[in-house]
Structures are given as structure tokens and as C-alpha cells.
Image (cartoon, rainbow, N blue to C red):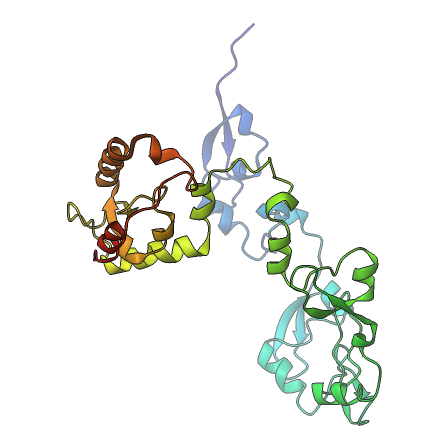
Length: 314
């Protein structure tokens, strides 16, 4: 079987060129391969309808255009000749050559306001532009908020359905909707009382009260206020090594577990960094021994001199 040539010779279809050129066999049916270059392709289209954009941004060939064009169509405002498609003219569009001509043609006319029709106010009967309420709301009935408020004077409001209740935590009287009370709600006057009612044995996380006393005290407001006061007094600086900016901890000079009556005394606290606090705790375990972890009831009472020494520290 003889071997076919790789390229095929063709002749440019532009009448002023007629130059011979070669194209590959797989591009013989391509429309652009009828001309030797792009210049001849564009010159051949002079006087013919130009290409337009089709789907997905692709150019349509001139032979694919099916819209007839009216070449000498006059603007209804200025009389200027222009080109318009027959489909635009039949649809009532393309009557003006530019936007200024359209604007000048509308001078003195008032188009009907379909979105905001003229409607009388239901209270003062003044005519206003009624605004639509949107997709899920009804149109407005009053011209202003003043008229809407005045129309409700003397009429029963939503508070007629409220029921007086007493808070189950603090006993304060408050009002709640009847529908909420019917569903089992309206038991507390605020979220704060609701949160306080869920503490301790009433909490669904209650596990028998095995949390250590020190961990419970860390979350109380008294402990947080004492710790902040100690930090501010020491200017957020370690009292032992003088470092500033490192992770700090509030230390009790006389231990928390041994002296419970000095727990929230600001004079019994000082600011220490984590390494200094760890070394101080290690020394306390050697001094107090088994008393360090015993309950406050079993510890002996401290003497007056130790109290005075702790309260005199700054």
C-alpha cells in the first residue's frame, strides 16, 4: 500500500491572493485552513456580516448567522441611521441609537410605579408609596412608624397572654408567655438562675462529689479576685527571681491546706513563676509532712504569731 503524503496542498480562497500552501490531513476540514494566513481570512470577510459569540464563548462562522439585519433603521429621537436586527424591532426594542436619546424621549412622561403603588394609609388616610414586604412578609399598611404605633392604642397587645411566675431559684416574680409555660418552660427568671439551679447534685454531670476542695475553689469568683489582686500588687513579676513575662502563678505564703482562714488574704499571697512555685511547694512538703494533705478540721489551729507574720507580708 503506497504511503500517503503527510501534508496536503491547498489554494487560498481569497480572490486577491490565490496562494498555494500546505496543511496537515487532520485539519483539512477546519474553516481556518481555507486561507493561507489570518490576514487573508479577515480581508475576505469585508462586506459580509461579522462573526458573533456563540455558546461557551466560541465564535460563530458567518454562514451560521441566521438573524436578518435592517441596515437603514432611523432613531426615533434624533433620526440617525443605525443597524438593528429584525427580531429586536419586532419585539419593540432598538428604537433609539443611544441612552441619551432614550432619556430625552422620556422627558415629561411618568411611568407607572408597579413595585410601589399609591396606597392610602389605614390610620391617617394619606397617600404613600406602598412597599412590598418581600417574599415572606405582607405589604405595609401604614405610611410611617408613628401611624402604626398610634393605631394600636387602646387595643389588646401581646402582654395580655403573659402569666406571672415566681423564679424557682431566687423567688423573683417575672412574666412569661402562656405557650412557654404550657410546654414546661418559664421556671427561672434569667439564665443566671437557670445555671445556678444545675450545680451540685442537680447537674447531669454529678458523680458523687469526689472533686477535691482545691479544684472547686479555683473556679469561684473569690479565688479569681484574690489571684488578680496579687498579680496587680506585684506588677506581674516573680517575687523570688524577678522575671517578668513568664507564666506566673499566685502562691500562698502560708499553705492553702494548713491555714484555711488565710486563703483569700491578699497579704498571704505572692506572685511566683512556675519553677519557683514548684521548688517552694517541694520545701513545704518537707516541713509540714503528713499534715499537708489532711482535711482542715483535723489540723491544729495556728498560733497568733504566725497569723501576724502572714498578714504583715507585702
